[in-house]
Amino acid sequence: MTRTDEFAKDMCKMLKSSWPELEWKCAWSPGAGYEHVDLVGRLKRRKLIFIEVELRRYAPVVNVIKMWKWMDAHTLEMKPIMVQAFSGFYSKGDSRRTSAEFIGFKMAKEHRVTYISLGFSYKPRKYGKVGAGRRRIHARQLATTISRKLQQGSH
Image (cartoon, rainbow, N blue to C red; front, side):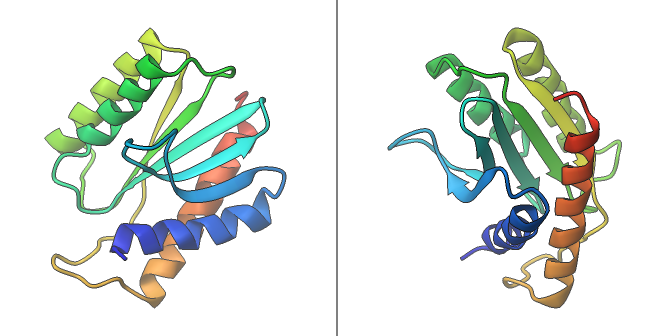
């Protein structure tokens, strides 16, 4: 298991308790042969939420492109929401982050997708293992932030 997988599992536990009407799954993909998204929340045909957690990925734009390819390949019955959460490894002006956000907002314009970019304070160490207490704390905090943001919005 990677650190991001474990982070997503911690988030999933928190989201299941704070937003139980949605079915939350880690490492989900739309079918065989596709890359997976870190976390997805589904409510029948009314809501589909994709969450990508960027801890230390050197090309986070790849996750947005992956989603865009999914949107091109599948007609979804509802307007999905994509949340891309950037750890403290990426500063606000980091070119990797701004490039991912740029592509995310372009994807949102072309498809019926809501793209949300968030930052969170966790700074995972380089070459770090799976993590433990601090990872769990930050995963829970991020899950709470995402849940509040989505429930406040008109999504």
